[in-house]
Image (cartoon, rainbow, N blue to C red; front, side, top):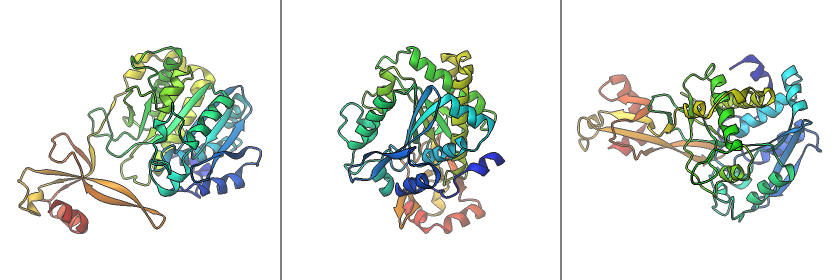
Length: 366
C-alpha cells in the first residue's frame, strides 16, 4: 500500500463488520450536513444515508452493501470520499469534473445483522423490477432524481473465487452486466466494458494476475442488469480475497485504487482506446478455492482413503460484535482441481501440528 493512501484511510473502521450507525457517525464528523442526509429508510426504520460530493457535469452514482455482509467496498468507498477532500491536484480535478452520489450502506438492517438479505429476508439485488422493498425504492428514486451518467454497483465476493484456472485468488472482479438475454452490446454496455479493460491494465501494475471477470448471465431482477437495460453504463465491482487477508484490508486498498483508475479513465477519455476484446481477455472467475485444503486425512481417521482430499470453507458468523470464521466441510471435497488458501499435508509434522490446534476441524474430518 502507498503512503498517500495511509494518510487518508479511515482508520476508525476496519475488519469485516461495519454496522450502519458507523456511517452516520463518520458522516456527521466529516461532511457538512447539506452533503449528507437520509435518502429513505429501511424495513426496520434505519436511515439509508446519501452523500453527495463534487460540482462537475459527469454524474456518478455508487452504492455499496446492498448485501449487508459485504462491507469491503463500503470501507473503500469511505476512503475514496476522504481522498476527494485531501486537497491534492488530482482530487480537486475529480471534484470539478464529477458530481457524485454515494449510498454507502443501502441495506442497513442486513449490515447490522451481517446478513446478505434485508429484514424481510429479501435479496435486494433480485428486486429491481418488483421494487417490493423500501431500500429498493430508495435506490431507484436516487437513480431517477440524480440521472447518473455512470452507475457503480459495489459488492464483495467469497474466498472461493480464483482467476481463470490459476491458483491466484480473484482479489478484484468486474462485470459489464448484460442488458438482455442475448447479451447484446449497445453503446452503454460497450462503454462499461472499455472502462473495465482500462482499469484492468492499470491494476496489473499493482495487482498482477489478481483481477477476474464475473459471469454475465442476464437476470432482469438484478439492479445492475436493469440499469444497464435503461441505457446507463453500469459496472459491477466485486472485492474478493487477497492472500492472508481475511479482514480484507488489502482488498479494500485495491478497490480504492480501482475507483481512482476508472474515474481517471472517464475524465481523460483514455478508456475509449480499449475494446470489447480487451474486456473479454480478462480471465473469467472460477470457483476452485477452499480456505483450507487437507491432504492425508487418513492419518486422523480411517474413514478416509489415503488419497482423499478434504476442503474446509469458513462461514462468517457475527458474535458479540465481531466476525468469527467457523469451519465447514466444503462441497468441493474430493475434487482434483481444488486449491487451498492454506494447504495442509498431514504427513508433514509441522502441518499436523497446525491441525491439532484446531479441534473443530479435527471433529469435522474425523
